[in-house]
Image (tube, rainbow, N blue to C red; front, top):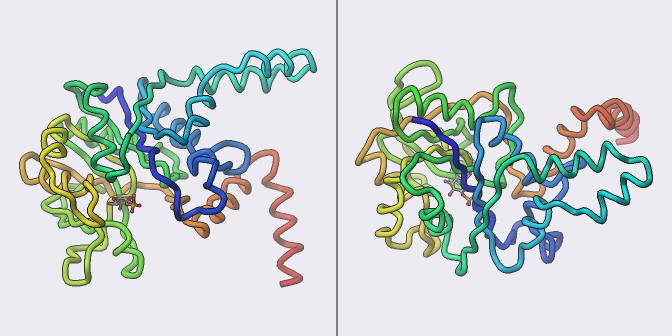
Length: 289
Ligand code: G1P
């Protein structure tokens, strides 16, 4: 199994981050000096992905503009001696082959993924959710792709989450295989207390076989009246083998204000231009709190 294509659903209305996201797509909010979406794409590319489909909507053209060339700006930068930044901008657009499809109706994550059918054709593919930003030694998607290739099946990635957070995610019924890998027996989206099977949730990373498309097309609306990807995965894991990787790395939920601030701080602390400055600033600030 070789995974070359990825789908990034980015058609949501960003209602959890208003008012900032009224006119700026939440995927374009800056995390230190890059938009959130760029981190996701860098993870995909460093995991071996070549072709990326972004599922977008009519109000989010800033995303395709960002992954395009901008000759006027590049010339201006070069004329003023900022060649390095000009090359950096071009490198962003050249990172992968970018494709776009619009989700014309907001009908849920499963519906968004189903828009990718023609692009994917008959090969396995990755899905990366834009809210979940990872900081890890080995890219999280790469950890999943390695497991999908080893076991020759679909693979979902996640971690243990607290009882309080679990109802916002999903719950899985798992059977240990080896190391960080488990077989998936069942999944339930946004579980009620009596539906909880384990605290291992799926957190924004998937490697799926194209079998998912027939399943999604036949799926009735689930939680919130939306076509849920998780309901499709529950069906897929009953039909064929699916493994779960308890991935190694720190995950940030940038779809929430607090998660976004945690990510901003941690990435700024790691950044070579801002790390030392921020460390000193926090130490000074802490004295006054
Ligand atoms: C989505 C998925 C859910 C997953 C979560 C975190 O939920 O439906 O299964 O656990 O992302 O990746 P949402 O954040 O869209 O409510």
